Image (cartoon, rainbow, N blue to C red; front, side, top):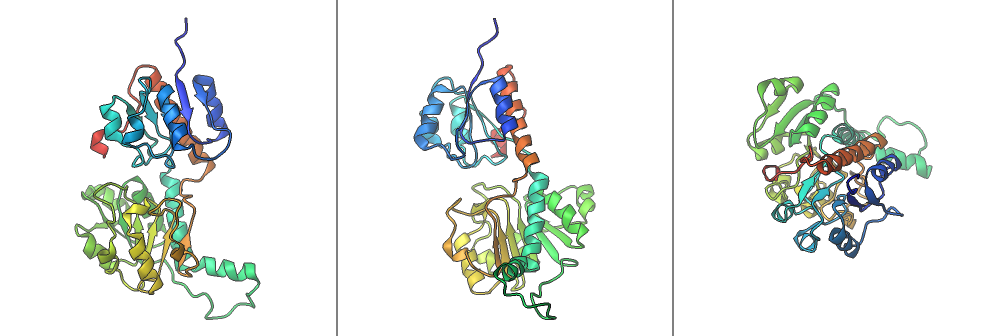
Length: 328
């Protein structure tokens, strides 16, 4: 007799091809509409399911995990980030956690360069003028921005995405600098002619553009705090596509409003979808709705990784993308 299929609960709508494949392989419960599950719905799910497939919009904390039933043995996260999941508590309960690393690298790096260009070349201002009908024709001094060639880009976190950003920036003629907990191997640095800074303070003070590409951990919370933000040059630009908590958003808002830096491009926010209202309508700020990974190809690949993680677990093996304590 065939073994009983795993009970899988998915907390958000996923690409149709992913949902179809999940249905073929498992006893899956899908969402009817593209809205987050309530906490009560997730609690009910973890009481009955073998596998939970959450997304970054779900908070899987210790109190929720404590209510999980005996059947729950895998949290197969749809996404690379896992700071919304209490991995340590899950481990103590014997529940494995997996994620989908590497899928969004190129897509996120594209958005980083898009934000850099949008801020430095004042693209939203130009777009606004065209949409409002205020443009009266070309003028030598209108919408003057700055070229990227020759600018110093400081990458905070030179992992997969940081390296992908560096490759793109080099193609624009930018000078690559980075700060990491550990220096990269010389042959890796040579690929993008990167300069390592052991001191984040010293790097921040000398860069034209800062790109935040590190994960959110206890050690990176408010890594760009008020003191460090004040080290930036008046002509500097800050771009964040990683996690909002890495920047003290209130401090960033203050220096932007005061004109102490040239601008910012943000795709993530400290309070999730609760955007600081004072960031809106700033002419030197470009805001995106967390769309760094928003490509059809990327979202399908994320789903494929989720399926592989669950299928491998169902076959009695550890998921290939298991999150382990050393990653925290």
